Image 1 (cartoon, rainbow, N blue to C red):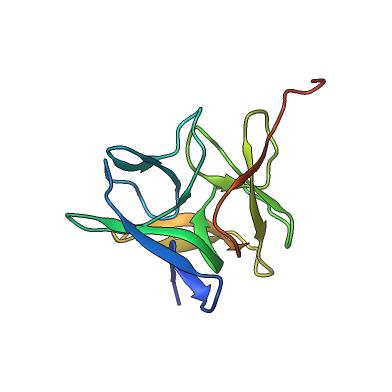
Image 2 (tube, rainbow, N blue to C red):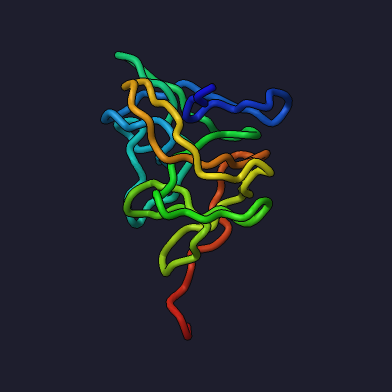
Length: 148
């Protein structure tokens, strides 16, 4: 069965989904941040505050925390179970790579760590990986340049 992006599959005390206005359409499963005009896809110089969920005309879902959440990742991702999760500040994709300026967030890759195809509300399939983020999304570290 195809999984849906930005849905906490292990329900319980960890999952927190809030409704927010979106300033622009953002595909599910990408990192977003909040502005005065609404949620936007993550861009350099901003800190992610959640994962884009389904969006309607007036507002949309933002996954703030949860377990077994499928998020978008690069096609060449090779995550390891229980390893740290990083976000590419230029694309909003989640990855295992600690490349310069990538943001280490308070999440780990789940036990089921294979890159799979997950569905978004546009009906298309995207590369995705499962993460656990039991507390509201926060940046733990910005990866420094080598030798700094």
